[in-house]
Image (cartoon, rainbow, N blue to C red; front, side, top):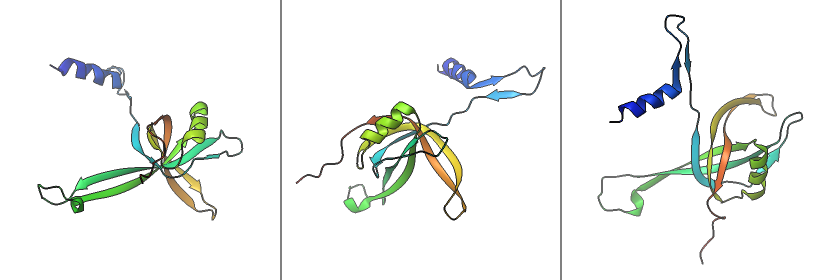
Length: 148
């Protein structure tokens, strides 16, 4: 039933040259990230001389799971892990909107790609950094509001 559409999708992502002419295989790949979480700090805008400015902020995502075999839900059975992501926004329009409207505590959805890079710190030590390069941000709510 799904065989034909699946093959059509696969042919879109993988292209082969004739095996007679060469063994070269051209493949498409996918580097896509979707995150939904809360902003950790207000964004900052940085600009290195000769390069375009970038808006940077952190985003927390939570993973929760039940521990134990109990069928009855108890608060102590839930474990949680928070992961922090560094978000960088380079696109001019989105960069400015993110800088102006992203606020600490805001719940947002970010689409983008993973980027692994290196930089030299203040002590001239080479460091590695993982960054999410955002190309879409959706604002889901205002800052968290405490209930009295």
